[in-house]
Image (tube, rainbow, N blue to C red; front, side):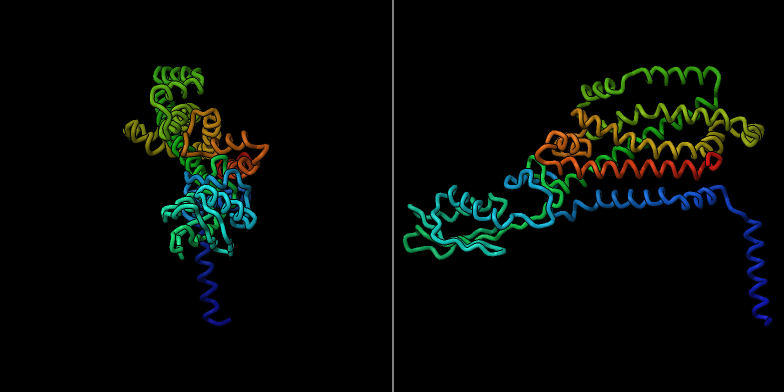
Length: 383
């Protein structure tokens, strides 16, 4: 055995001894268990892809979420471009009829149409607006006018557009609206959960730590708020403040913090009896320092798990409120609004319900699997 090999083996042995002395933290163990959970890791990937599609996808679809295409109302989802070849001639005939032109000859190519038209009166070049109003044609122009100005040649490009998810009842691109709706639903879920997290953790930790009469009064306030019907509370907010985006996450978050407060209170009652908390009190650390350094950090495990389960709950609540007409208003949309519209048009336009439902279902499943994975990772005793 050479000296170089012996030195290498000695270095590896020393490294193993150092690693054994350092050990792994509880968070390292939790991360290792989470990575071993294939369903949770796959859900992270799915949720990331959905979020990226919703926030960056609308810039790539080629449509605005509120643009109305009157010639494409309730067209089915398709990978091929619209208009179809058999739709161009009827649309062209309709445009010529509106402009009161007679078509002497028509040439329809892949990207443009060339029509020789005539009229009983002199042709005004402003008549190209009849072509521009149609969603099938663009950049129309007259040329080769006759001497009396009663005949000319019209050239117009065929405006090819893709509607991969089809269009809705107003002729708006459903793919763009589904992605925009995802932004609203995800933002509402995250913001409402953030409000619930902030209020619930603060309220529950204060109630559990101080205990006694303070705890009794604070928990009775929670019980009173629990007795208020959620829908009644939202209707009151709508009456006083109107329907807007900010209202949604305030209304939902201002109610959902009650569960969070009870969870954190229960954890705080257990944690404040631990030796390290009693030692901090004996050393003269104030209540604020104990809550900030010892109580709240040690409640993060159950809190993180609850938040992952709260986000899908909030998204479902928003969808339910939008379904009732109390949520997001037109022209803005959410998955709840789209599903409501799709349910009304299910018989003749099933794609209006299918695609938003797929996005919502995939998001809810991903969040629930992530919550289950975090629960198993942060609380291995339940495994």
